[in-house]
Image (cartoon, helix red, strand yellow):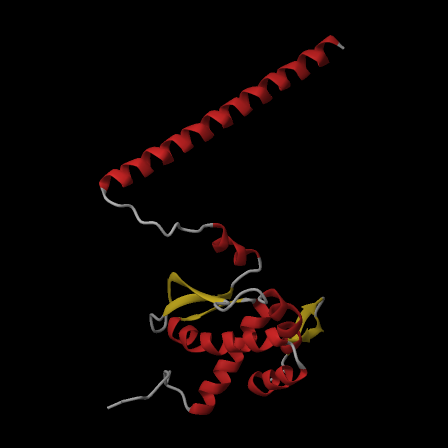
Length: 194
């Protein structure tokens, strides 16, 4: 029986799981998108989010704690056959990723299931990625009203109101297009006369 046993074993020893978790999160912070299996992504997601929350504080104590949890791996690129050091994972975490998510209360990562399966063991593959800076404000634009419809009459009125607003927008866009067409025609006549 496995009562109150948390986490996944992933067919690894404790040390191997810890090393795998650190490597996956370091690669996620370096590349911002990685491909892995769904079980590994679900196991690593809370650790990555805790580190980003730690980076949001930006203090020296938080930086030291992140180094203790993750390690401070170098970010290396190969340019013209030579290794070029671009910084460290902790440096990127505290300088880019922490400030990016200052106004976001959580949910810094997402898991997108792919239609691909690994050839060897048919494991489900996913994309594990950080939420972009531009996507943080998308959900704030759309808000629902707190009032609920009181029966079919209210629902019909709401549908009619929505159709009329859509029709009004269509009329405005066609009028704007017609006005632009007439201005374009006037411009072409002026060019012919000159």
